[in-house]
Picture 1: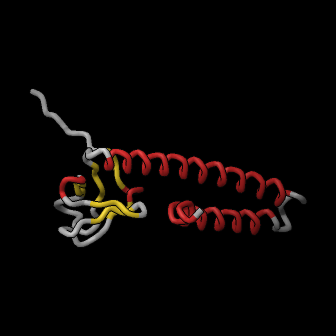
Picture 2: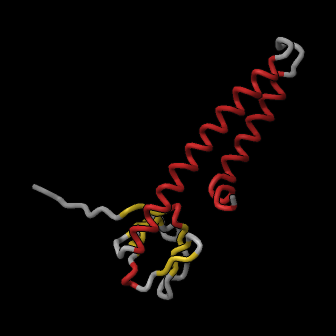
Length: 128
């Protein structure tokens, strides 16, 4: 459950805001009586479906990336420290990287990377 809240906290906040706006708008005097029930059910259901889908996709990618890392394959994570030059970091078990509690860390690198923000490494080949 902790992982769910780590991944979806922002989206849960957005959903709560959307529900609050829906409640505010549908309880105005010029809106049909009982519209707040339909509005809350519609917005709440849509938010729950979208948040659930996002959690499923993100957690599936996380577990795929972590299993690839344990097999010794390369993983690419986004680097938010330097936006202009190196926007990604290649993480590999053979380069002293370790994985603990969904966080990649290395003694040779100053910060950790959350596995939810990583993808499988796919080498790019240029052809003429």
